[in-house]
Length: 503
Image (cartoon, rainbow, N blue to C red; front, side, top):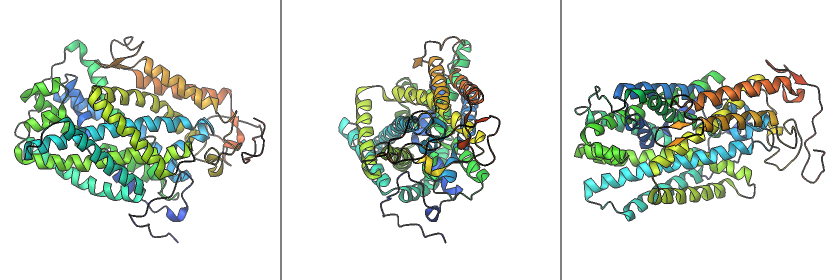
């Protein structure tokens, strides 16, 4: 019999151990709300404005946005399956394919992603709140005002994440409906000024680099959820059909076209009516400059709701996973520590550097490194026929040794090699106009081919290594491997740290 969900105000004590079946009461629709709510915010609007910042027309920017969202959703959605299967987060599940120790790669990538997108959320929402308060109540746009706004946002997010999954789900239930309604209200506010024939400023010979660069920045948003989906889908019962879980993850990203297109459309208005704001890359300031006065209060509400939603989805999973890497820290302690580090990053970045440029570049490079990791995970899921050993996945967290996923000294060099080679290739070929160009970024005529290359390299190399150097038969289920072959070699038993085991 399934237990009733615990109260919202009860602090979650679950770490990354497998969630007991009785506590797995979430549904695919809950997953949809969390993933969509985490992206249905001002920070996504900022990313949606980049095609206009790069000089594309509205229709060119819309095409790049559709390409980025749909491609990103397709890459992301299979990552939702690991949670229901294993009852734990995706970094722990990656032990099966990168090794007991290799799972720290996923933890490190999720930490970087969370800091980047948490910072973007707090920055964009804080700026919108201060700007709206300035226009409505005359609050000065001072360093102190911005600092207070950022601190309040970060503190509220930290409180929600401390309470845990149920409280975060409650916040996102509110955010999905209210933020969408406010975006619809924004359509009314800006409809009279919107001109879909905005032609852009891009030169013809620079179109493809700008188009591909815009699509990749958009794509970074859905792919950024890859390391986090398991944090939420682990509460979905294992018996739930996989197609429903995958569909929920896919549709949650398709729904983000609402904030993306809002950002794209309003950026095109700003480019025509107040271009100086885009020259300074101040999308939030430009939005407030062109908005009718009656929309200032909805802007403040959208900033508050959106900042909470994005911040909680980014920070919760990282605090959870950080506690597994450093087992002396509880989930709550790890969440507070990571949150404090992120706040420092926000203040240093906001008042010491060009935050918009820094975060967009940082996010794109993180995605270039995260996507090959996701490819290895998904191909591993396919070759293993979705079969995993839950006890062997927890070896690292329990500070044990051995098990099906020990491989060589706790590292599966096949998955690790495919990941790092593909990630390095991706960074080398990165070409973000005006921001970051890798050493080989100019070989494709200025077009950023980093992501397609890293995906292809990861897929081909990982499958080739599995074929040439087969994994032990013990890592596969009773039906054996799919597409690749297995080696009949013994695996070490799981032992406690006090018991010596041959490496």
